[in-house]
Amino acid sequence: MAGVRRARQETLRETRREIDDFLRIGAVQVAELDLGDGTGVAEEAEAESAVLRPGPGSPPVTSGAVFVLVRRAGRPVGTLLGQVPEGADPTRVLAGLARELPRSAPPEPWPAPPSAGVVVATRERADQLARALDSLLAQDHPDFEIVVVDNAPVTGDTRALVERKYGERVRYVSEPVPGLAVAHNRGLAVVRGEVVAFTDDDVVADPRWLTELTAPFAADPRLGCATGLILPARLRTPAQVLLESHGGFAKGFVARTYDPEHPPADEPLFPFTAGRFGSGANMAFRTEVLRAVGGFDPATGAGTRARGGDDLYGFVRVLAHGQRLRYTPRALVWHHHRETWRDLETQAYGYGAGLTAYLTAVLVNRPALLPALLARVPGGLAHARRLTAVRATGEGAGPEAMGAPGGHDSRTHPWPRRLARLQRRGMLYGPVGYLRARRALRATGGEAR
Image 1 (cartoon, rainbow, N blue to C red):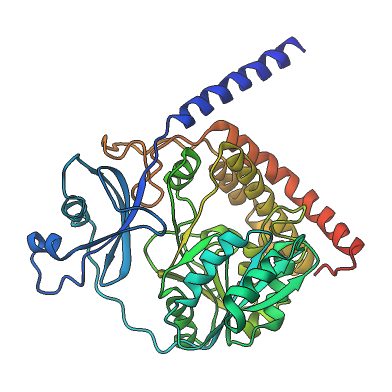
Image 2: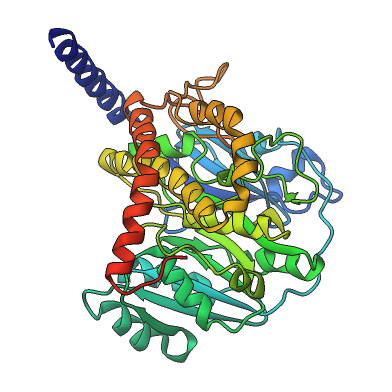
């Protein structure tokens, strides 16, 4: 007992040290820098034509650390961290750093995008929802609708907002059963577009987000799902900076198509490492395909005892249906990350729980996938160890990189052991949480998939 007590005390001391280190992380400005198309422009002159804008809702850029999305001809091509000296021109400093990013050939233009429906599930966050809807209504897509699903509402604030401010431009639907997957299925049932896109109420969508996310469906008849790039709207708190320095929700700046008929050689756990494909704040499906696979499992997702995994479940079900999935960084949303240490604890546990809950859901609903999953168990265990490891800072980072995120997944802060332990605990809980969520769903008169 004495040994157990000492171990607990040491763990508590370690957590306190980690929190102290965490609280020393400073705020970072967020901005985007467009270098133009670079055609016929010398590198020295590129800074003169560059356009620097603050991130969504941010003030103009001043001296200090700046997290920058770099664009060429409007297309996202990378991120970097810049340190703007006092009195210096932020545009010139950051454009000079951006020249170090590799150049790539302009992508081929997409065909005209298909009709689309955008589903936004929300619950008692009218202020955030208004910001998201404003950005969605500014999309350049030629044919789309927006559906707000008010999930298990307690007040009439969301309905009042939609009816008062947005009128007929946004459809309001109420879903009394709690759970993100339930809300998404409600939206799926009512949208009319050929493609259904999903995003969250805490994002700001780039004006070309919906066009870039849905146009690939017109080019590839076997495409069942598309995901896009998610970047931080703010890096004002230590929690936001820490999360983004370890990759956040972003999946990089290289487009990729996943085909179940040609499994990727560098993804031995395919398709079960669904978190590599994208996230629920930025995803779209061919409507008829998502309906054909039964939508999302209503016993998964935020708001249920499973804690998450609804988006991962959707990705795997579509791939198992023989459809392709494409990740496209040209489809961008800015996400408002959680703000506190407690938020990160909840998020870490929920990520772990959602991962194993969705795997349980896949096997419950598609038992035929069990042999494929069992064949990947050894690699899956190794992947789980890597996923929950105490991630160190990147090697060789210069002083301008320490203290803030720069390139994708640059890991400029150590990942706390406390959060890694919580993620592992969540992974152990996930299957139990999923089964409890199924029972709770039946008790409310809902149907489990």
